[in-house]
Length: 238
Image (cartoon, rainbow, N blue to C red; front, side):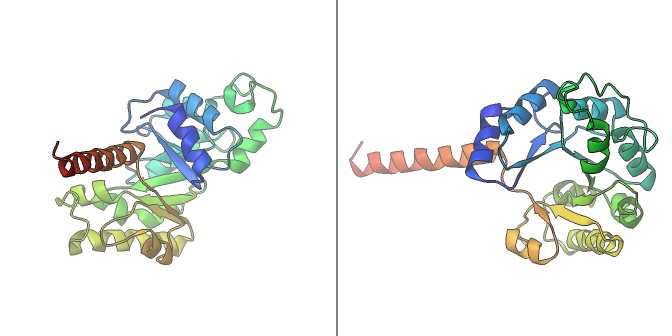
């Protein structure tokens, strides 16, 4: 919901990480910066999922202070190379430099920011299509790619079976991408599915398993409160 207070709450309650979503939310880069401020000195790590592979957007969200990035719908090694290059300063990449002016460097107060950005940036690429699955090993092998995040929802849709995660055809694609990532030695991430809860996925080798969205948490809590209220009123004949 692009809300800094919700970001702050997620940090206070103890989540290991939080994904600031710019792909499906109404949030803009200014909202990203404000949510990053909300995390402040909290221990929760923030990862920003960008809307796509636009190099100018990647540059701007990094300048806003994103410490970790998730880039959706990667299907080829060339796309992976382009995404990584857009995030890294020359000579390793082609990110435009305004390091002395932007929030990421403390507006120039962090004198070694360029070195810090090179050493600490974490990049996760999402595999969400059959083509991406077929090219997972080549994508994961690109220098600068730290994690392959399997987007099961869009992958199932690309298989013609949207949200049918347990179908053998979908499971086969997920397992193929997992195996390819492991052969390259990169980290794995995903979201829970009916046939794979947090615990099973971690046992399967996933380092990062995303939890619920803020919208889901609020919706479900509100539904429970309303149900309890109405049941209580019904018992009182009202």
